[in-house]
Length: 242
Length: 110
Image 1 (cartoon, rainbow over the protein chains, first blue to last red):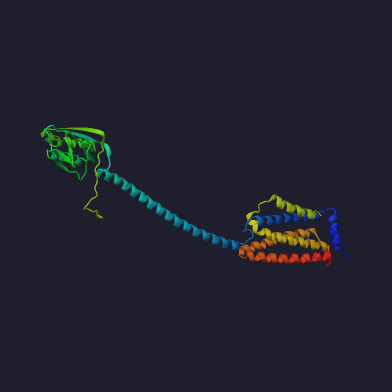
Image 2 (cartoon, one colour):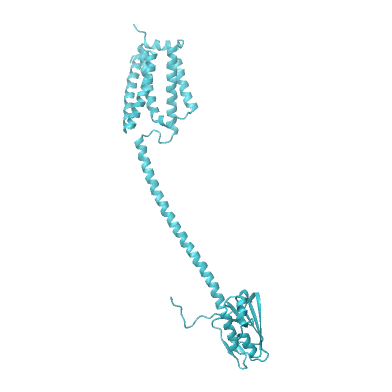
């Protein structure tokens, strides 16, 4: 008659451990080790360790399509950003061009003071025989030589609409301002070119000397043109598109 | 007695050492654990029946683990790893239940 199971179990607990028990202990230890490991892995490894390959593949697919969508959205946004950037750069460039054009036009129309290298032409006229026509010739020579800003006697800025006329006693009247000799013309431009335009044979200087006056030209590194021309709103002319 | 001590030692080592499981072995570890559990309950039942043999126990333990892992590996290669591992778990679960029932009859005569 075989021994009852319960007493066999109790005896095994009390008995001196033999080789068989040792082997069983080693195997059980490895089982416990693996089980504890697996439990820890399942608890700590996030949501994916227990899942099968197919589920993971499906998950990966959905994630990668989401990534694709997001990346194409990023591309779109980057394109839009580049477009905005170039348009704002273009606007910046247009603005700078406009500003420099504004400077050019302001100097041309005489609404701002200007400074730069140039010449000072002093015309002495003891006999009062130098007339507006001669003055205008001199101004034209200066313009032809590339003078960018011109003023006369520190009083009148010479611009496109400036008029040269003669007053009752043959004085020179420029833009309704009566000038008295000696006439001093300040011109901004290349000093060399401007002074040559004044003194070339048969030019302004010779013309004035024939009339009994004298012309002296001084080349300066800095000439200031401080007098301003008042711009009036055009009454008749209107700008067109071209 | 020393067997129970071994089991506790193994659990403690697994909890405390926290070794990293190699990536390719990860899918087979749970199956291997269930297979080993089946072998252990089978061994306990054999012990209570009075026919326990440590050689048989070692062989059944190792072969259980290896075969379970092999089946799951094969299933993964064939693309039916999920279904096969479920099948292995079900079979091992049934065996564990029947072994536990036999052990219960031995210990409680019910």
